Length: 365
Image (cartoon, rainbow, N blue to C red; front, side, top):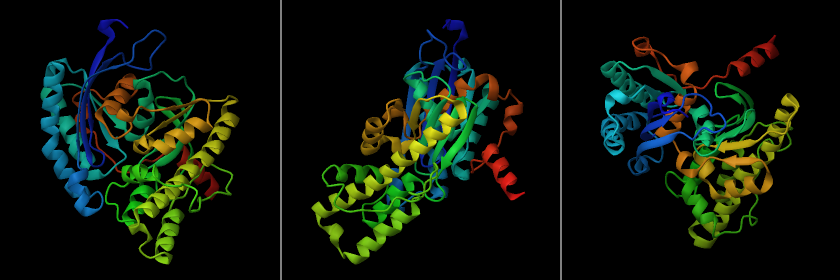
């Protein structure tokens, strides 16, 4: 890569409860053979976990206010750490969807303020696409591939044809995997966020001691359902009063509950990969990203079950500015909105897939 081809992207992530800012340098677009991976010049991060523990989950208004308090100091931190000056930034990449609208608007307004002051373009970023494409921060995976985004708010399989062309192969019809962990943790009195706590406790337990159901197990497709396992855990605890107060039993319950969540993903991945093979005529690589991809049982199970699986590095799994800056860089030519037109960019809370809408409309006719 020629130095003159490189761009510096300021990435801003505020879609939920994590505030993160990154300065990243690299050549726009997908890497070609011989290109170096984009360089993370500086990455700053603030988690609201301790603040939100007392509420037992994310409160959008509180999250948005804390983003407002932390965004400017985090931006100052990355410029100081990297030695990059404000006028060296070529574009700002910011999460615009999906997520909690208040937090999204806080980050977007911060990004537009920077664009206004320094007259630079803006690149809107789909948070989910950024999660899965973060694999390219550490290694290059050829297109097409099958992607699994597994996080607190979303669990879906994608056929990734390019950085800007993705098709849904399957998704949860109710709760996401991360929600199943957090809601299960609440029932067990583990606090918020429960995913890491359950993962750690499960290492001390027997995952085969208790059985919890896998939603849509008999459906020969890549759709998932996690509402039933949460209800099953609640019934189990009602029938076995105070069992979770025994440390050894708590570990067994966590291990068994976690196994159910992970086994559902393992099962449905088979259908997603099969559907992708039917569509493309090829056995495709399999990439996993998102916050829940940090889970040790999920990483171990998927690596043992699928040969061509690649999992995003834990550092880039949780919501972070690096994945946002990277996806902005990767879609630089396609998604860049020049200044001053970029100042009218808006955020939206929901992720809407055009292909899914078209299929739904056809079925109703």
